[in-house]
Image 1 (cartoon, rainbow, N blue to C red):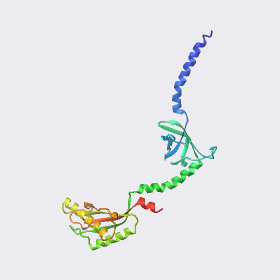
Image 2 (tube, helix red, strand yellow):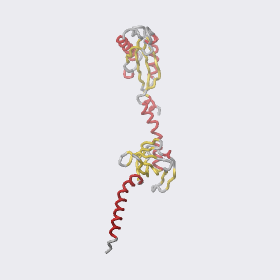
Image 3 (cartoon, rainbow, N blue to C red):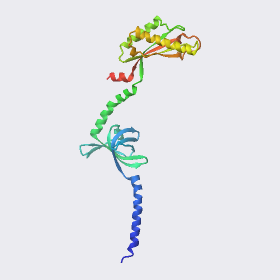
Image 4 (cartoon, rainbow, N blue to C red):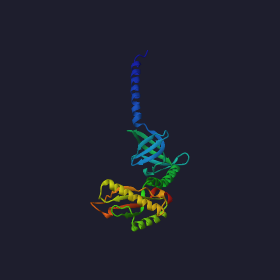
Length: 258
Protein backbone atom coordinates (compact mmCIF):
# COMPACT_ATOMS: atom_id res chain seq x y z
CA UNK A 1 0.00 0.00 0.00
CA UNK A 2 1.49 3.31 -1.15
CA UNK A 3 0.23 5.66 1.55
CA UNK A 4 3.12 8.15 1.06
CA UNK A 5 1.69 9.11 -2.36
CA UNK A 6 -1.59 10.35 -0.85
CA UNK A 7 -0.17 13.63 0.45
CA UNK A 8 1.43 14.23 -2.94
CA UNK A 9 -1.94 13.81 -4.67
CA UNK A 10 -3.44 16.34 -2.30
CA UNK A 11 -0.67 18.84 -3.06
CA UNK A 12 -1.11 18.34 -6.79
CA UNK A 13 -4.89 18.84 -6.51
CA UNK A 14 -4.35 22.02 -4.51
CA UNK A 15 -1.86 23.34 -7.07
CA UNK A 16 -4.28 22.56 -9.91
CA UNK A 17 -7.11 24.35 -8.13
CA UNK A 18 -4.90 27.39 -7.65
CA UNK A 19 -4.01 27.38 -11.35
CA UNK A 20 -7.67 27.11 -12.38
CA UNK A 21 -8.58 30.07 -10.21
CA UNK A 22 -5.83 32.12 -11.85
CA UNK A 23 -6.83 31.25 -15.46
CA UNK A 24 -9.82 33.63 -15.84
CA UNK A 25 -7.65 36.55 -14.77
CA UNK A 26 -5.01 35.55 -17.30
CA UNK A 27 -7.61 35.22 -20.08
CA UNK A 28 -9.11 38.61 -19.31
CA UNK A 29 -5.78 40.42 -19.32
CA UNK A 30 -3.65 38.70 -21.93
CA UNK A 31 -5.57 36.27 -24.14
CA UNK A 32 -5.52 37.31 -27.81
CA UNK A 33 -8.90 37.48 -29.53
CA UNK A 34 -10.02 38.09 -33.10
CA UNK A 35 -12.55 40.78 -34.00
CA UNK A 36 -14.13 40.90 -37.45
CA UNK A 37 -16.22 43.85 -38.47
CA UNK A 38 -16.59 47.17 -40.25
CA UNK A 39 -14.59 50.26 -39.31
CA UNK A 40 -17.07 53.01 -38.47
CA UNK A 41 -14.67 55.70 -37.21
CA UNK A 42 -10.97 56.49 -37.08
CA UNK A 43 -9.81 59.08 -34.55
CA UNK A 44 -6.08 59.28 -33.99
CA UNK A 45 -4.92 55.97 -32.51
CA UNK A 46 -8.47 54.80 -31.83
CA UNK A 47 -10.64 52.93 -34.29
CA UNK A 48 -14.24 51.92 -33.80
CA UNK A 49 -15.37 48.61 -35.29
CA UNK A 50 -18.91 47.27 -35.51
CA UNK A 51 -18.57 43.49 -35.22
CA UNK A 52 -20.66 40.63 -36.59
CA UNK A 53 -23.04 40.90 -33.62
CA UNK A 54 -23.61 44.60 -34.43
CA UNK A 55 -21.75 45.52 -31.24
CA UNK A 56 -19.38 48.48 -31.29
CA UNK A 57 -15.81 47.73 -30.22
CA UNK A 58 -13.26 50.39 -29.34
CA UNK A 59 -9.75 49.40 -30.40
CA UNK A 60 -6.49 51.27 -29.95
CA UNK A 61 -3.46 50.87 -32.19
CA UNK A 62 0.16 51.63 -31.34
CA UNK A 63 3.66 51.57 -32.77
CA UNK A 64 3.79 47.77 -32.48
CA UNK A 65 0.55 47.17 -34.40
CA UNK A 66 1.05 45.66 -37.84
CA UNK A 67 -1.23 46.26 -40.83
CA UNK A 68 -1.69 43.78 -43.65
CA UNK A 69 -3.52 44.07 -46.95
CA UNK A 70 -4.26 40.56 -48.20
CA UNK A 71 -4.82 39.38 -51.78
CA UNK A 72 -6.49 36.34 -53.30
CA UNK A 73 -9.17 34.01 -51.99
CA UNK A 74 -7.00 32.50 -49.26
CA UNK A 75 -5.41 35.75 -48.15
CA UNK A 76 -2.03 34.04 -48.08
CA UNK A 77 -0.50 36.81 -50.18
CA UNK A 78 -0.23 40.05 -48.28
CA UNK A 79 1.68 43.29 -48.11
CA UNK A 80 2.39 45.51 -45.15
CA UNK A 81 0.71 48.88 -45.13
CA UNK A 82 0.53 51.79 -42.71
CA UNK A 83 -2.04 52.97 -40.21
CA UNK A 84 -3.21 55.58 -42.72
CA UNK A 85 -4.88 52.84 -44.77
CA UNK A 86 -7.63 52.51 -42.16
CA UNK A 87 -10.84 54.34 -43.06
CA UNK A 88 -14.56 54.20 -42.26
CA UNK A 89 -16.37 51.54 -44.28
CA UNK A 90 -13.38 49.15 -44.43
CA UNK A 91 -14.06 45.54 -43.34
CA UNK A 92 -11.20 44.40 -41.10
CA UNK A 93 -9.99 41.49 -39.03
CA UNK A 94 -8.31 42.63 -35.82
CA UNK A 95 -6.15 40.52 -33.54
CA UNK A 96 -6.20 42.22 -30.16
CA UNK A 97 -5.87 41.80 -26.43
CA UNK A 98 -8.24 43.28 -23.84
CA UNK A 99 -7.12 46.68 -22.56
CA UNK A 100 -9.31 48.54 -20.12
CA UNK A 101 -12.81 48.99 -21.51
CA UNK A 102 -11.64 48.16 -25.05
CA UNK A 103 -8.90 46.33 -26.87
CA UNK A 104 -5.34 46.93 -28.02
CA UNK A 105 -4.62 45.74 -31.56
CA UNK A 106 -1.56 43.66 -32.38
CA UNK A 107 -2.55 43.17 -36.03
CA UNK A 108 -5.13 44.64 -38.40
CA UNK A 109 -5.71 42.97 -41.75
CA UNK A 110 -8.11 43.60 -44.61
CA UNK A 111 -8.65 42.42 -48.18
CA UNK A 112 -7.24 44.37 -51.09
CA UNK A 113 -10.64 44.27 -52.83
CA UNK A 114 -12.41 45.67 -49.76
CA UNK A 115 -9.83 48.45 -49.51
CA UNK A 116 -10.51 49.55 -53.10
CA UNK A 117 -14.26 49.60 -52.50
CA UNK A 118 -13.85 51.61 -49.30
CA UNK A 119 -11.65 54.11 -51.18
CA UNK A 120 -14.28 54.53 -53.88
CA UNK A 121 -17.04 55.01 -51.33
CA UNK A 122 -15.00 57.55 -49.38
CA UNK A 123 -14.17 59.49 -52.55
CA UNK A 124 -17.85 59.76 -53.43
CA UNK A 125 -19.05 60.26 -49.87
CA UNK A 126 -17.10 63.42 -49.04
CA UNK A 127 -19.00 65.75 -51.40
CA UNK A 128 -22.30 64.15 -50.41
CA UNK A 129 -21.57 64.62 -46.71
CA UNK A 130 -20.64 68.25 -47.27
CA UNK A 131 -23.81 68.79 -49.26
CA UNK A 132 -25.98 67.25 -46.52
CA UNK A 133 -24.30 69.48 -43.95
CA UNK A 134 -25.18 72.51 -46.09
CA UNK A 135 -28.93 71.86 -46.26
CA UNK A 136 -30.73 74.63 -44.40
CA UNK A 137 -27.74 76.98 -44.76
CA UNK A 138 -28.54 79.88 -47.06
CA UNK A 139 -26.25 81.94 -49.23
CA UNK A 140 -27.28 85.49 -50.08
CA UNK A 141 -26.92 86.28 -53.79
CA UNK A 142 -28.31 89.82 -53.66
CA UNK A 143 -29.50 92.32 -51.05
CA UNK A 144 -31.69 95.39 -51.28
CA UNK A 145 -32.53 97.95 -48.59
CA UNK A 146 -35.81 99.80 -49.12
CA UNK A 147 -35.94 103.06 -47.13
CA UNK A 148 -39.11 104.70 -45.82
CA UNK A 149 -40.19 108.14 -44.69
CA UNK A 150 -40.92 108.54 -40.99
CA UNK A 151 -44.11 106.72 -40.01
CA UNK A 152 -44.75 105.61 -43.62
CA UNK A 153 -45.16 102.27 -45.38
CA UNK A 154 -45.13 103.74 -48.91
CA UNK A 155 -42.36 102.41 -51.15
CA UNK A 156 -40.44 105.13 -52.98
CA UNK A 157 -39.55 105.06 -56.67
CA UNK A 158 -35.95 104.24 -55.76
CA UNK A 159 -37.13 101.41 -53.54
CA UNK A 160 -39.30 99.98 -56.32
CA UNK A 161 -36.38 100.09 -58.75
CA UNK A 162 -34.18 98.19 -56.31
CA UNK A 163 -36.90 95.57 -55.76
CA UNK A 164 -37.43 95.17 -59.51
CA UNK A 165 -33.70 94.58 -60.00
CA UNK A 166 -33.63 91.96 -57.24
CA UNK A 167 -36.72 90.27 -58.72
CA UNK A 168 -35.08 90.09 -62.14
CA UNK A 169 -32.06 88.35 -60.66
CA UNK A 170 -34.34 86.01 -58.70
CA UNK A 171 -36.15 84.89 -61.86
CA UNK A 172 -32.81 83.81 -63.32
CA UNK A 173 -31.93 81.81 -60.19
CA UNK A 174 -33.04 78.20 -59.67
CA UNK A 175 -34.76 77.33 -56.38
CA UNK A 176 -34.43 80.83 -54.97
CA UNK A 177 -36.07 82.22 -51.86
CA UNK A 178 -36.63 85.85 -50.90
CA UNK A 179 -36.50 86.70 -47.20
CA UNK A 180 -37.08 90.12 -45.69
CA UNK A 181 -37.25 92.00 -42.39
CA UNK A 182 -38.82 95.35 -41.57
CA UNK A 183 -37.35 97.93 -39.15
CA UNK A 184 -38.05 101.36 -37.68
CA UNK A 185 -36.01 104.08 -36.04
CA UNK A 186 -36.09 104.52 -32.27
CA UNK A 187 -38.72 107.26 -32.08
CA UNK A 188 -42.15 106.30 -30.75
CA UNK A 189 -43.13 103.51 -28.38
CA UNK A 190 -42.09 99.90 -28.82
CA UNK A 191 -45.54 98.51 -29.64
CA UNK A 192 -46.12 101.09 -32.39
CA UNK A 193 -42.69 100.46 -33.85
CA UNK A 194 -43.34 96.73 -33.93
CA UNK A 195 -46.59 97.21 -35.85
CA UNK A 196 -44.95 99.65 -38.25
CA UNK A 197 -42.05 97.31 -38.98
CA UNK A 198 -44.52 94.52 -39.76
CA UNK A 199 -46.54 96.75 -42.10
CA UNK A 200 -43.39 97.79 -43.97
CA UNK A 201 -42.36 94.17 -44.43
CA UNK A 202 -45.85 93.32 -45.70
CA UNK A 203 -45.77 96.24 -48.16
CA UNK A 204 -42.52 94.97 -49.67
CA UNK A 205 -43.81 91.38 -49.80
CA UNK A 206 -46.94 92.53 -51.62
CA UNK A 207 -44.92 94.56 -54.12
CA UNK A 208 -42.61 91.65 -54.96
CA UNK A 209 -45.56 89.32 -55.53
CA UNK A 210 -48.08 91.68 -57.14
CA UNK A 211 -45.88 94.00 -59.18
CA UNK A 212 -42.41 92.45 -59.55
CA UNK A 213 -43.81 89.09 -60.64
CA UNK A 214 -42.31 86.74 -58.02
CA UNK A 215 -44.25 83.62 -57.11
CA UNK A 216 -45.83 83.81 -53.63
CA UNK A 217 -44.23 80.51 -52.67
CA UNK A 218 -40.79 81.99 -53.32
CA UNK A 219 -41.27 85.07 -51.14
CA UNK A 220 -41.33 84.28 -47.46
CA UNK A 221 -43.60 86.22 -45.18
CA UNK A 222 -41.76 89.29 -43.96
CA UNK A 223 -40.79 89.62 -40.31
CA UNK A 224 -41.38 92.82 -38.37
CA UNK A 225 -38.33 93.36 -36.19
CA UNK A 226 -39.22 96.64 -34.51
CA UNK A 227 -36.38 99.09 -33.94
CA UNK A 228 -33.33 98.44 -36.11
CA UNK A 229 -30.15 97.37 -34.26
CA UNK A 230 -28.29 100.33 -35.83
CA UNK A 231 -31.06 102.85 -35.16
CA UNK A 232 -29.25 104.81 -32.46
CA UNK A 233 -31.26 107.55 -30.75
CA UNK A 234 -33.98 109.63 -32.32
CA UNK A 235 -34.93 109.91 -35.98
CA UNK A 236 -32.59 107.91 -38.23
CA UNK A 237 -33.54 107.65 -41.90
CA UNK A 238 -31.19 104.69 -42.41
CA UNK A 239 -33.04 102.67 -39.75
CA UNK A 240 -36.48 103.09 -41.39
CA UNK A 241 -36.10 100.22 -43.83
CA UNK A 242 -36.89 96.75 -45.07
CA UNK A 243 -33.87 94.54 -45.74
CA UNK A 244 -34.53 92.10 -48.61
CA UNK A 245 -32.26 89.18 -49.50
CA UNK A 246 -32.27 86.79 -52.43
CA UNK A 247 -30.97 83.48 -51.04
CA UNK A 248 -30.42 79.88 -52.14
CA UNK A 249 -30.05 76.70 -50.11
CA UNK A 250 -26.37 75.74 -50.36
CA UNK A 251 -27.16 72.02 -50.18
CA UNK A 252 -29.61 72.18 -53.09
CA UNK A 253 -27.24 74.24 -55.21
CA UNK A 254 -24.37 71.80 -54.54
CA UNK A 255 -26.53 68.94 -55.81
CA UNK A 256 -27.42 70.80 -59.02
CA UNK A 257 -23.78 71.68 -59.70
CA UNK A 258 -22.87 68.03 -60.34
